[in-house]
Image 1 (cartoon, rainbow, N blue to C red):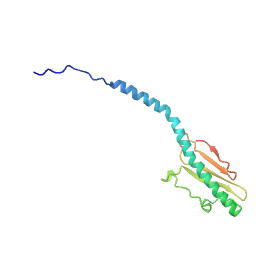
Image 2: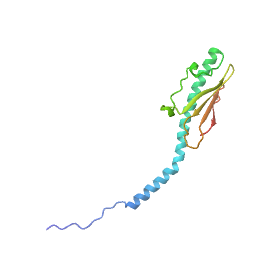
Image 3: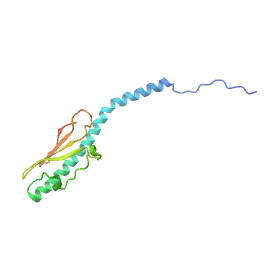
Image 4: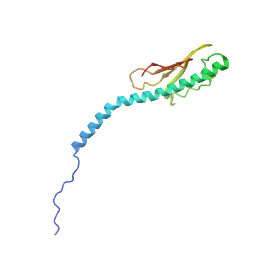
Length: 137
């Protein structure tokens, strides 16, 4: 006759211990999230800087060829990528604010509020290649 094995308990975590561990991990993720959103904003700002530096190169070429800067992006050969709000990938709208024989200024305005604070990121550049953040996000 077979004797049943005595009741043995396997060592494992209880449901309560697992739930406590999940709550702790959740709190840590919640605390780290604001720092992560700032990293995302900085990465997206790189797009604005690169686009404005490219526009500066095109404006400089225009100045050397025609002795004047241009306000027409098409004339410069700058192609605005489709914006993320229109189904594209670009997060910034690029525009030349003013252009003349001696100077130009352009800006990149975010079309998305990266950290949902109601303020849109804006970068600007001029003929001296002075790149600055006009409105932080």
